[in-house]
Structure formats: structure tokens, C-alpha cells
Length: 243
Image 1: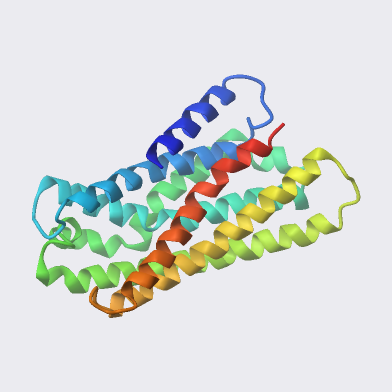
Image 2 (image 1 turned 90 degrees about the vertical axis):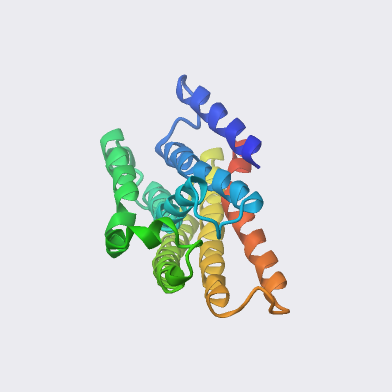
């Protein structure tokens, strides 16, 4: 999956350097989302082969990245859903709304939001850096995940509403063009991703109260992993529908 994401990022950057049907704000946002998620993919791989219960530089980097990334997914999905909704509901003002300066502002907001949503964690840097390694930080870790669940589920629901509203608005359109058909695919993808975010983070509640030894743990963990993969990687394949 890392190689797939890397290949798509390189492809998108190449397309942005020339006139292209995907050189739009939607794909700019999608590319930044890929870039922000790339460290999470690396840390996830590291976590599979490293004991997170040991205090080390690797576990500290993993904890910081996990803390920051956990609040990004839902926010990025809302911004993308808003982008798709305005493309359908306000086509005349779309380019003005999503001019480069506004896109940059949205992305900067995404980067600082974790510090707003969970600034209290910065007052306990020891647990922030060693949330998986130190037993005394188990309460800190549960509180962190609980806040991330609330934030991402709320944003996932908001993104779902925006995507659904965009689909309703789309149905009232009378033109029948390739771009119209493409917009519907984008909306369907956005709605699917938002619903999967809600399911993915809602399932985290189970992990907060169940031990790994629970007989249903593996089943729930598999379902959550599938939701994660679909939500993160299906947008890449939309490129094949661009003509």
C-alpha cells in the first residue's frame, strides 16, 4: 500500500505541473491528504514489528504521529465533502471559494486543529511520548482515543450530510455531461468515505473496553482494518475514471 500511495502522489504532482483535468482543488486536497497520511502508514508498519511497550525514540515518534494523525482524517473528509458540495450547489462561485489562498488556509487549519482539540495533552508530555509504553499512561491513552473518536465521528457525520446534500442537489441538475457523471462519482466516493470514517472510529469504542484476548476482538479488528483500507485507498482508483 505504501508503494501504491507513493506512485499516486508522484503521478498527481506530475499532473499538477501541466494542463490536466485533475489539476483542480479537489485533487490538490486529496494529494495533501495522502501526504499527511503517509507518515501514519510508515508508523503503522513500524508498529507491526516494534514493541510499543518499550521506551525508545521509535515509540516516541510513533506516539507523536499517532496523536497528531488521529484528529486529521475526519477534518480532511469534511473539507473534501465541502469542496464537492460547493462544486454542485455553487458552481458559479466554486473557483472563487476554492482559490489557492483559501485551499492553503484550509490545509494550515487542518495541521493546527489537533493542538486545538487536544491541547491539554501537551501538559503531560511524558504520557504523550510514551502513551503505549508506560502503565501509568493507560488512562491518558483512553482519554486521547475517546476524544479522537468523538471528533472524527462528528466530522464524519458532517461530511456525510454535505455529501448527501450534494447528491440531492445533483439529482436536480438537468445537464447530462461527462463532468456531471464524474461529479456523481466524486460525491458517491465522498459519502462512502465519510460513512466508513464513522464506522471505523465508532468501532474504536470497542477497543477501549475490551482486551485483546476477547474472542470477538479479532473479528472487530478485521472489520475495522477493512474499513480503514477502503476509506484510505479507494479514492486513488477514482483517477482511472478521469478522461
